[in-house]
Length: 75
Image 1 (cartoon, rainbow, N blue to C red):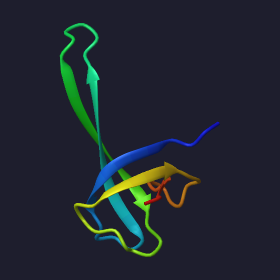
Image 2: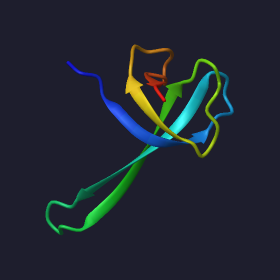
Image 3: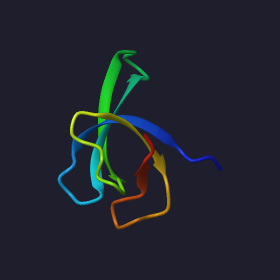
Image 4: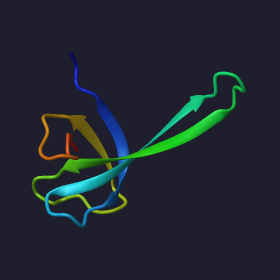
């Protein structure tokens, strides 16, 4: 099974070795057919603390680092 890769924007980098990434997706409502925008926040592992707020990053699924961190920053 392939690992998911998501693209989002860093919203918080205050924690040590952790960034919070907000991923936004667009989809068409099944009945009303209006385009809807939804966003979700993911905690991702950032080993060297090099990503700051506002940067666009890619995250990939990985083994759990902690209770909430099951994603890792790729670039």
